Image 1 (cartoon, one colour):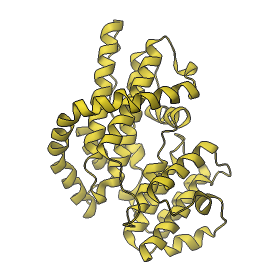
Image 2: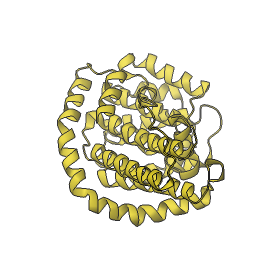
Image 3: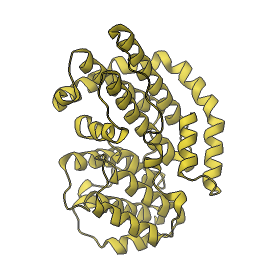
Image 4: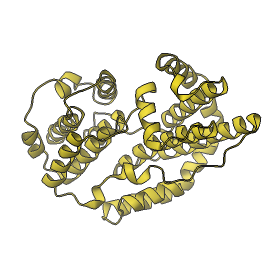
Length: 310
């Protein structure tokens, strides 16, 4: 039960980041609640978000080095759930880093990944633009699936963040095709606010993996269908003459869910052989990255560079 006790303490510490600015949005609460229901069904959202606890005492309960790093990374992920990191959240992160003696290798991978890849040239021909956009969607979805299909415990953080920021990069690229210059960070905020796609699940995963009866990392099929549906929803909105300002949360979420269950699922089945081939090709590089992380040889820049090559 020691693992579960430490993991539960880690979840409380993670939640402290979400509440650090004194305001927990309904969307943040829903995301965390959904993630707990899926991955740790015997832990209630109230137990994590509502009950009062001593943050310093919870931090001290976590004595295993791997759980300490996972707690920091979970808190780090949740601090980016709305695309911004607030001062109060940064203070909690600094407290964790100090308490657990974490160095630069345990730093902000999320920032290292964002906006590293240049944008493609703008295409003015509507038919060519739509065709390129759909290739972009399929390519990002397949790569997300290949990452999700390699759930090595040591790199679950890397693969989860990689999938999430690949989705953010896809939104950024699609917006650019249609004349909107947004950063990956702004794309992440759009994903969280409009689609409810945030890092809460990825954050929870960092800790539940230590308890065998709880859940596991995102799989290839989920990574593909969520990425594909996200891209198609935004592309169809643009193709119908919409812009980022007119993207209705209610309508976009409805379209996203329909595409995820229909076209995205069908596209995954069609692309599955190629995805499995990609996953097999990338496995040695991901395993090598896991080895470097275990031996302390991979810092954020090295990890981000590997994800770019993937």
